[in-house]
Image 1 (cartoon, one colour):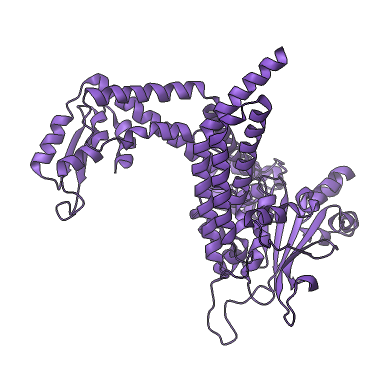
Image 2: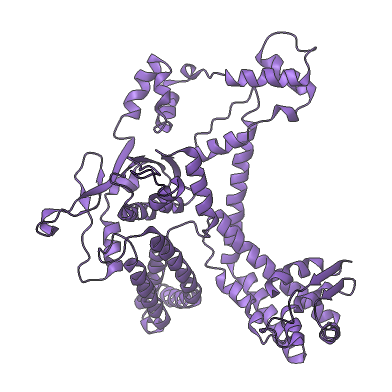
Length: 553
């Protein structure tokens, strides 16, 4: 309740506003035993709205409302500090939201946000007496000083704003490329999708502009044509528009063919174009093929009399690669070993063609190599096409419905949506409506843009680098909190690895535990990032100062 009130309260300030808050079933709620205490604890942000704001509280007892009204009689200095603090807190939360929207890591500013939210952890009977006011002012000064000195806060906010502005600029460029007479080449798949959804609308142009457009592109008199006729004529010309590709130099044409690696329809346009583009589109140096399927377990690991199958991968015309069993060792170490054993061609490929064979239904063990693939390609700049072969029907052999296409697609491909904004993803083999519904449904339930395993590797490397720096400086004894953070990270990693379907045959097979485990690990890692941020920075600065003094000597 408090968090929902302080943002509008800080915005209203001293403006003349009439606000009515109606509460229902307060008397029947057994958790609210003291209404006066409840009002002081939950509605204290209303104090910063100033004397010109008229607030009406309905549904409470009269004496509780009167007591709250008397408590609102605070001085202007305290109200000004309260307004400044609430605006500061809203600014911090806005920065975190921008970073999540842009896909930028915001763990540097979580300690600031935690420090700014600390006054909310006080006793809920906040009445702003002298002791509370001094403590409140101290917190405000500390947070403001941290924001002024901490360069990470400005860096995260500027980086998030620059990413969002670049996306907006791309969308505007795509919209302008629809103007007749302008040539704007955009080879990015994301830009093309935005272009298709933001086509130039001739109905927004004036009559003179439409006549100018038509005069440039067609012969004839358009003075007597109405606006609807001009729009229909221009749209028909757009459908028949052609581009003089062969007038470009050969080097530019070859670059265009290379960008169309996953769109071979250009081979059917002309014989000369077919002869030029076919070696590039079919060349193995351009597209790397990765196959994911279930294969028979190798004989050395096969139980006598059984033909078990497991997920395996194959790159181009190579051999099938099976994951090594973890044995009695650590599960998270086995998972990291599988991740490191993937062929380097998968990560270095510019165009990656992933073929997932769904023969025999949708075994969820196929999700493990897809998850590892998404972890490897996170924040890379690649074009990835995923083709689903032998995709099962939504009905079984007796005509009974199994699952919706979105659920079947989510059973395998949900990790592919966590590769970051640098990877361009194209999914084929399923209806387009099912793909769009699957993406929309998954993005609504996720607040991170990477897999939890990727975040775990980044955090582990960061802590380990600080520990190595401290050992080099001779202050390894100061890294107790960092070693504790590594231990906690390893423990949550073990719990996560134990819940992955297909990683342990003794565990039940199911996709929902895998998805929930990834979300759970992401939340635990976010808490760990907040806990180790301050010790990491403190030890890093101390070790850097010692090493800098040694170098100067």
